[in-house]
Length: 113
Length: 114
Image (cartoon, rainbow over all chains, first blue to last red; front, side, top):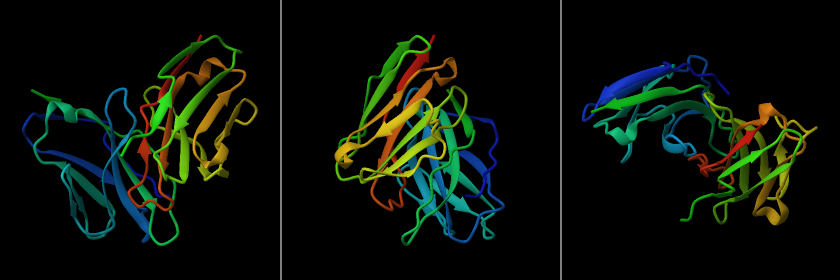
């Protein structure tokens, strides 16, 4: 699975959009971009995933560049409860082949009042 | 749907003792995973089961760690004997076979070895 690079930490004001970047320059054509987050003392929680089109769900939006070498997770209106470690993971998915979820260090997002 | 259940929530043992963790996955999820998360690091996969067979245990320290998944449902992870460096949170996750959304994680068991 391709490796990802994320900033170690980021801050965001409550109510503002949080934009979390991720670089995955060695991503392969059959690898999806996944985002998980881990709130203190809990297990990781799935947020969103995408292949090449931008995706949006009730939690967040995922913007993937045209060359697929980087992506941005957007939390449109961050709240204090969004304070967590955010993991960007690339993973083979689709058809009959599904790769492991391999976690890096992630980005510590702190949302301030 | 009910989540992934793990017990105990916390465990403190002395080094060289043994310990076991239990996981009950989401009903119908054929794939089960055990992860180890050391403080300040991302989770690391220890072992993956497909039904009751092992798919990947390449990162499992087999001299002291063992895991089983009888009847393809519940799973136990055992450490014997424990070392100080085994202090970590042990996370269980499950998924549908080929689950494109990835895994659902439990809250984990926090192990402290003193």
